[in-house]
Length: 191
Image (cartoon, rainbow, N blue to C red; front, side):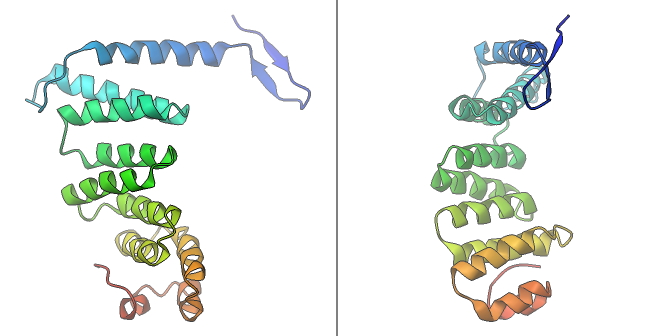
């Protein structure tokens, strides 16, 4: 049993309990990487389970900033489930987190080719464009994400930043009023 200790800031820390549990989980998940995974899914339950484990390990590695290992896990899972738009999006997010926004765009594009109305990939694509200083295209992608998910009001603030970076002061009032339809005169995006 781990004991709790206090730090100088008053935080309570479990002596390695969480870290040990995380390492055990990671060790178990890493076992999936030793299986030979065929190039395409055959509907085999064992292969699908392996892909699920690899996806989970990829998320765990991404969160712990082990990006290269996470990328490897997502790519291996995609060998089993190549038409999984969410896996492509997770690969893109991991690539972006590792500072590889151009590579991330390719993964997001693949996700969008599978599911064109996937708002999360449009948002992530916009962020990748922003990271690459392509703010006009970022604005279009933010608008596309908003068109698909109007309830994601936090995206309006990202859009305002992109509009500011492109010095589109004339469009800031439209963003402030959250008038999506008014933007159709300036940007091409689908309802």
